[in-house]
Length: 272
Image (cartoon, rainbow, N blue to C red; front, side, top):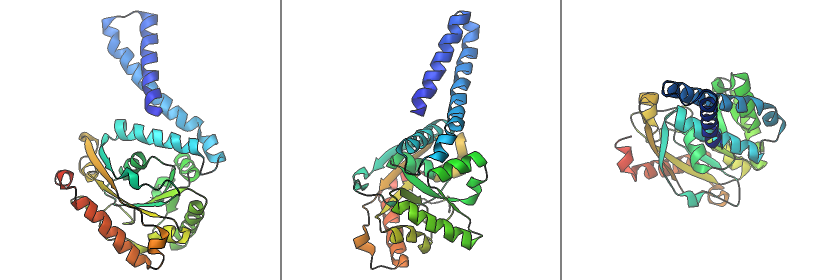
C-alpha cells in the first residue's frame, strides 16, 4: 500500500508541475525531485495522521498491522536497501492459531525482514531504547510490542507478563532469543536466553523457528551496499510437542533447528 501510494504521489506531483509550467528539459530533474520528496512527505504524514487511530484501536486491529507491514516493506526496500531473495517454508506458518516466532538476530533490519516474510499481524519484543521517541513508542505499544529493559528485571518481567496476555488475546509475537545483535561474522545463532521461551510456553501457542541469512552484511556495510537476504521458516513446535520440556530444553531444540536450517543454505551463507 505505502509503496504504491508513494509512487502514485511522485508521478502525480511530477505530472502536475510539468502541466503547470510546461515540459521544459531543464526543469524535469527538479520536478522529479519534487515528486520524490512529496512521496516521502506523504509517508511521514500518514505515520503522524494515523497515530490517533493506532493508539485508540486494539493491538489485534488488522488494518493497523497491514499499514505497519506496508510501511516496513517501504523502509526495508527504499531506506535500508534490504532485499529478500527467497522465503522458504511459508507452508509451515500456522494458519489455525497465533504463534511466537523465534529467530536469529544479526542486525537492526531483522524485524523488517521477518515482518515482510511472515506477513501476518505480529508484535515484537524490542529493546527499550526504541521506545524513547514518543510517536514511535505510541505506535509500538499500539501493535502490542514489548519494551524489554535488560537493566531492570522487574520492568522486564511486567512486560513479559503483558506479552503473554497479548498472545493469549490472539496476536502473534516475534522474539530474538539471543537478546541483542550477535557476532556479525557468522549467520549462526549464538547462545540464547531460555527465559524468552516463557512467552510461548505460558500462552501455550506454537513456536515457529525462523532462520535469517544475510542481514549481518547490513551490520557491516549499512546502506552503502544492497543487502540480499534469505529467510527459512521451520516446522512449528506445537504445545503438545514441548509441554513436558523445560525452557532450557526448548531453547536448545530451537537453537539447533535454526542453526541447522542456516547450514543447509550455504550458498548465501558463504557470501552473507
